[in-house]
Image (cartoon, rainbow, N blue to C red; front, top):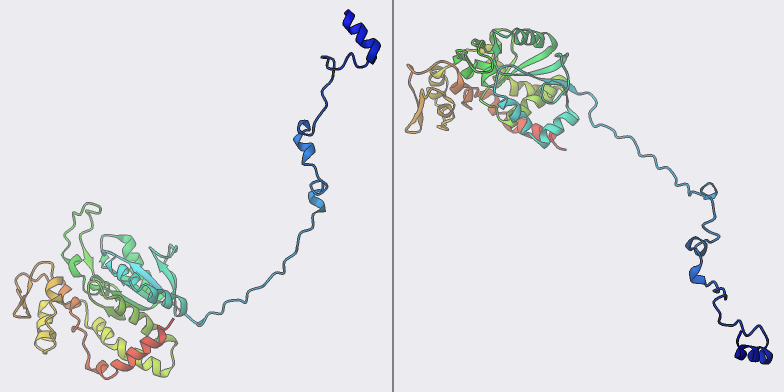
Length: 321
């Protein structure tokens, strides 16, 4: 302590002498407090077990009531074909959903149903011809006839063999498969749906008529019988058809409308259109039946003409969503 400090201590005392020195401790401020201490509040101190959860009332929805409980069972059996008939069936879009919702349960289909063996069913839609060299196909077509009440030949291959009759084997995936027959040569068939491929509307109508024939009232059964009779007569006529049948049963009867579908279906160009009518070269015809199956007048029936309006109204009524 120097002389000036001694003099200052005599005037102001010793406490003031140490003021402003390095031994002075800093005063703690609010900014220096820990963050956890600053945000600590009485609300946050509540434990999760003490929290009260608001209980909402449980609303029970009424059970959905199906409009039709008594459905028929339908299966799609695929033999040897191009799958075009199945594509045509699926092209019904909302109509197919209406049928599956109200009238039919799809119990067998390689593409749409996970079922290995052919079950019992009311209606079997069989697509394609049967390969005689394939033991599995031979067993399945016999099993289909045994388990189905009504067997429907779907498409030209199932009805008449179509171009599969002309197969000589040697194809890349199955070269040993060289002999094919329409299903009517192996089992009894009840209904034909000809054409390659049949229209979506025609497949839909046959499914609806099969339902009305099995589950409808007397009036509906009469209309369903009238609609299905020409297609049942085709099945009873056999599995042979060619360009000659087209000439005798369609052209010579004045039923040809000149649409050209027969010429478009012929794979060997045996049918050409001349002046709006089909011209058939018999030497080129392989008698596959493709032209006859494709012709919309090949199953024409005068018995159905008088009931066409009633059948159309019935189909429109049952297809309402």
